[in-house]
Image (cartoon, rainbow, N blue to C red):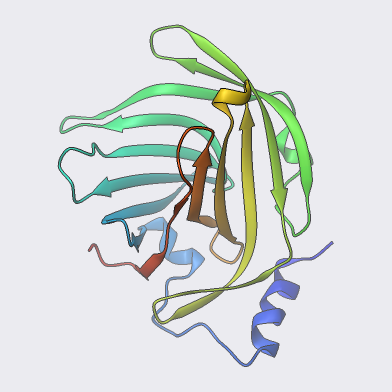
Length: 201
């Protein structure tokens, strides 16, 4: 089992280090901002029980802000719309297995289960969900370098509904940085993180 201390050693042996002013896991209590090259930023904040709450905001006023509550910073628990008055939950996600069996996330994992989305209008949808992770490496965001585990979330309901989200999971922070998205009908999108900070953009 590759523990976090070993992952951190990978970074140290490479001759690269995290700068003193780069966010750490302790900063997640107040929140960390990551700015992306698609004119958006995501605010990551730690909640109780190993949960990360994300809020994504776009420069384009036609793109409404939205949020996710994530187990271990990776696995969707609910999706919500951000309004001026409150956060409105639009869907809740349940998994056909106990996620404790596959946590913490480590390099070179692969597992599959069924997931169910239950929507605010009382409808639901079921999908086959496959999670996979690759070898640990490094991710540089602005002036900050972190140990990274590339991960993929593959969702399959039927061929025309297949989609995949790619992320770089940062175990020392416990959050996942968006790196790409593709589905059956559209061209692949690549996301590049430009900066990471405790300061709001």
